[in-house]
Image (cartoon, rainbow, N blue to C red):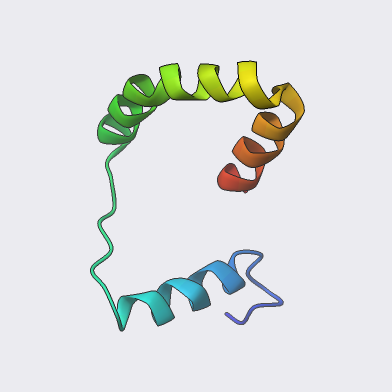
Length: 64
C-alpha cells in the first residue's frame, strides 16, 4: 500500500525515519488515558493563557 492508498502514509514514513534514530514506544489505550488525565491541568492552563482556538487546533492536529 503506497501513500496514495494509505492516508497515514506520510506519518508511517516519518515514523520509519525517526525509528532509525530513536526508540518509539507505542502506548496502550490505558497508558494513553493516564497521560491525558495527568496532563489535563496543563491543557487547561494553556487554554486560559492562549485561548481555546489554539488548543483545539493543536489537539485536532495531534489526533489526525
